Image (cartoon, rainbow, N blue to C red; front, side, top):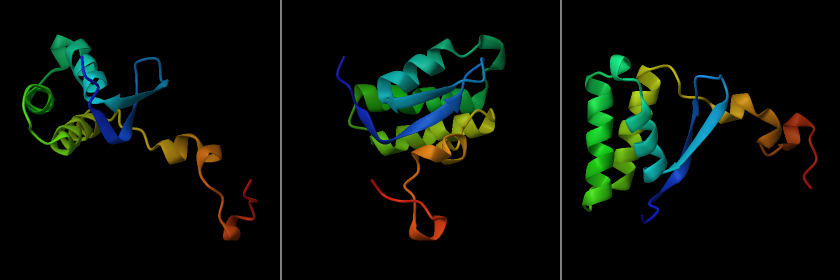
Amino acid sequence: MSRKTFDSPVFIKNGNRLIQEIACLEDALEFLYDWPQGRRGPIHATALRACQKAFETDYPLSAARSAFVGFAKSCRILEDVGAAMPWAQTPTASSGGMRA
């Protein structure tokens, strides 16, 4: 498989309340394939189709990522990584932090 990497990763909460990074198209497809059958719906189907199309053709990777983000938002599993990991943010002068 060729890795089609997203411009920026998508962070989601998995069932264990851990944060999972979806960095590429293959990660998104695997997540969508593993999503429980009983919780699938039209938004899942749209995201899956977009990701499959991007994998098989020259369909824009950004469109597939957007579809996956829409799915994650609809399921309330999209995670704001800045809020989840504040130590990973670059400090600013106004925050009193020092740059390394």
